[in-house]
Length: 535
Image 1 (spheres, helix red, strand yellow):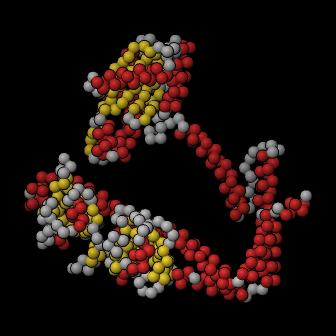
Image 2: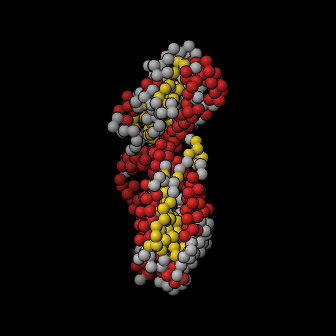
Image 3: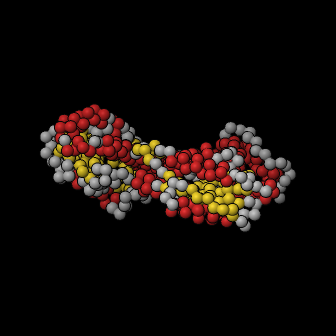
């Protein structure tokens, strides 16, 4: 029995594995090991570079989107009547130019034919921008990002962005076009300052233009991409996903390049490192292998086994306690932590995992009964509370009321302003409805823009009270909604059904739903009440 335990011991396996590794390394030889180590090293470095490339790509994407949003806000703020008054338009541009300095270096407003209506001083004298690709896209009603170019006057790398200026009907009337300095410290320069190793760094490339936009090595800014890198990128697609690329950098040096996409521009962030720097470690491995005798290695492995046995003793003790808990010999309790090392950390993590699993189980129970967007009870919890209310109604000869509510005008807000704004409206409606009802009542969301109010413990004379609650709901929803794009109003159509303990949940809900549609047919923004609903 003792021999079997030793044979299955983790310590025994560690010692045997160490000896096997030593023998394998000695027999196979340095060349075979070198090949595997080379791939392993490249893989580890690739993981690190991928993290760096993805971080830098997200940062660049956020900065690009920040500037594009700024231009869209600037275009939205332009008084449209000034497009017909060049003098007042130029005054407006001059007033706003100072405010735009943290973002755009200079900008202009052009008509749909490319004629400049107003511009900042740096662009004065530009007769037309009709040939600019970003302008051509923006005049079709879509924001656009142009090709990075070197400014012939300031000798700085510039990026052009353009957004449409639309009238109230959504038709494009003009184009706001701005230039951004890529070397500006607050834009891309900070992201690309660092280096990777001695000769590596970051580079931002545009596969569409076959151009290096910016790089840690400023001498490579706005230079053509190396042919080897262009070939490696072909077939990758916009996601730029996959393993790293090992290719020449155009200067005869082999580099490991890991890619990350910048979605807003179609650019790709590249974290590159010369493979020669990675493979320096192989020489150190060779020295280590050839300067240690087999006997020394064997002794080291045995000593390692003894130390591992001592270090893993708390783990063995914890495993024994856990087994006794599973057998019911002792009560369930957190495992003891005897040392503040990796084993102790593992035991603490295990204890925290048990605690977290319990918390997650409780949270899953909550999510199963509540709407994720508004936090209100969902249909399942509503049905449970309805059944309880009907039981009380049957026992106490009382009544319940169901108010089925559908929002009027919500679809237009959702379609025109977007689902994020629509979600904000639904949360606000949920908040307003929660302030109308009693604490003992229930406000639930069935989905979409449908809400249900459950009023319980009512008497035979509570019809007026139910109507009063319906009117309060209509008044609360009718209050103006202050949204980022302005002030909006919506209304609601409410169907009401009442019943006693003999009524059924589905019957009440269906009848209230029918009355809600009758309310919509009567002009919306009102309620319709049904008679008493039976079983």
